[in-house]
Length: 410
Image (cartoon, rainbow, N blue to C red; front, side):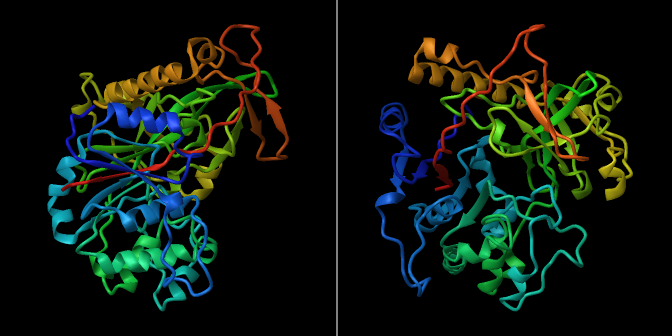
């Protein structure tokens, strides 16, 4: 889409993540793409004295980085989309000087336990740093030659994932700790600007038969160093990922301003056909009118939102925190997102056949969902549908996530 000329390495773990048809598709239609199957590789044993853990989940990404054939890498999860040509990121002065670049999550210290730092003799960084944010490792950059020692510590930490992942959410801050263990704590670099939230406007029906509009998180839009633009769209929500057999995904309608930790997703909902809970904001939590004043001449470059006074957790808990959002059409990457949807649907039709694909229409904002009340946790079923009176049935569950993607600046 960006006419990017970087070579690509796709790392996957066996045929369950990358079947024969998908392999044939990439080998036929893509050049400069290396396919690496982790399932046939022997793992190193010197990082663990009690035996090697099987590769699964986040470990696939870490080991893919560990064995990559590239000297410098941009690691992207398979549910991540580059919004610009990433080639220029390898020339960013901050990356050239430090040899690494990481990106923040919404949260300050959610799912983090100080033990993960203290067991190695380090002080947890968040209690005394209000600007601290946990890492969001859906994308990261690393010079593997400059930081070969960090790589060893990184695999050591994740090779003990049965311990480390109890004190953080997956691999997230193992990168920061690995730099510290290598004596390079001061060289770790993380973008300071918070991500934007990509939201889907969702209409629901309450138990009192009132139509309620909420906003479901589709993903995070990560920023460049020093606010140099929107770089990545990471589809973190289960419903935003492209699932071949169900065709369900959350389409982005709104994009927020940069969020503070207190504005990060707080409530959860259950949506039919989507496994697990998804983040959502309650009615009155998103200001969709501010952009009309901020973007008076209909151009994204002129959109400057007024200064906000961030509410505390108590106000947020009662849905009183308002933060501005603008339609995704105001952003230059809107066309790219639409193209990604079209490409997915075309590929899905090719793989399943037109008749089978038509039987499983794509997900939209008015599909039925089950919402759990925060008061009594009892579910109720939404009755909104595409047409008045039309009933919808639950969709089947999604396929397993596809493999990881690694590209280099070489």
